[in-house]
Amino acid sequence: MSQRKELGNKGEALAEEHLRSLGYQILETNWRSNHYEIDIIARDKDELVIVEVKARGSATYEHPSEAISDKKIRFLINAAEAYIFETDSHLDTRFDVITIIFYGQNFELEHFKDAFYPTA
Image (tube, rainbow, N blue to C red; front, side, top):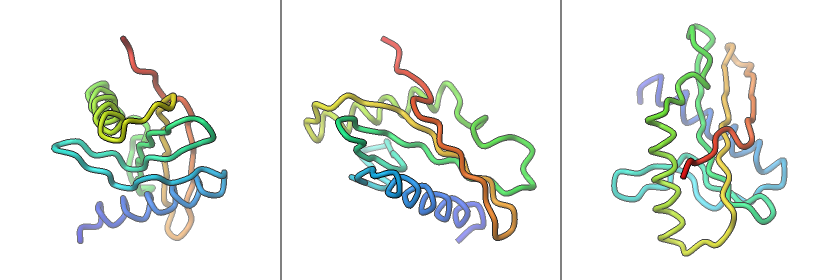
């Protein structure tokens, strides 16, 4: 497994643990349908939460949140629509981003609720 993939998997596990500690119910991890993928799908009270996880090593120059491009946002919105249609969900939907920067064995995790809003 590549070091990048390993870092990503570790980041997703930490993000999932973080969400559980806040009382979120994890519904899916690495959900896929056709060409869509969502890192974590959770429920926070009466909201469906679509979570994008970005993990980076400390040697990276950009903050992980900078990797969330407009194209990625459109992809996540389309993926969320596919999930909602597939599961017939009627919950309000929120998009969160969790970033993790690793410093050796330590890490810094930031959770951005309502990181972006789908446009009509």
